[in-house]
Amino acid sequence: MKEITKNMYIGEVLQMDRGIAEILLNAGMHCLGCPSSQMESIEEAAMVHGFNTDDLVAQLNNYLKSAE
Image 1 (spheres, rainbow, N blue to C red):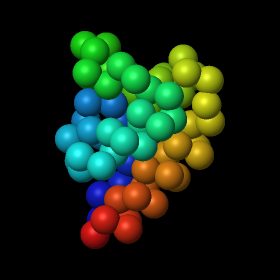
Image 2 (image 1 turned 90 degrees about the vertical axis):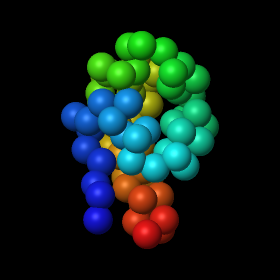
Image 3 (image 1 turned 90 degrees about the horizontal axis):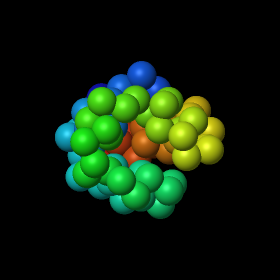
Image 4 (image 1 turned 45 degrees about the horizontal axis):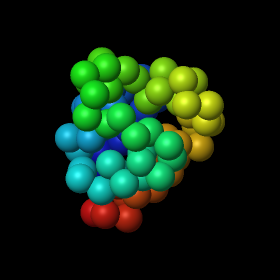
């Protein structure tokens, strides 16, 4: 199973599964296509957008698990 960590880059995570974009958009990350998202980690983005990194990572991993 693929697993997402808080140290992974947004761009890297988006390449894992197309459905991840919807989760990130719903979390408030509306700049998924901006250049900085390619070099920004999940943890950095969470800090910038003011949400809990661990909760987001858990949500993303739950999605990946259910998509298998």
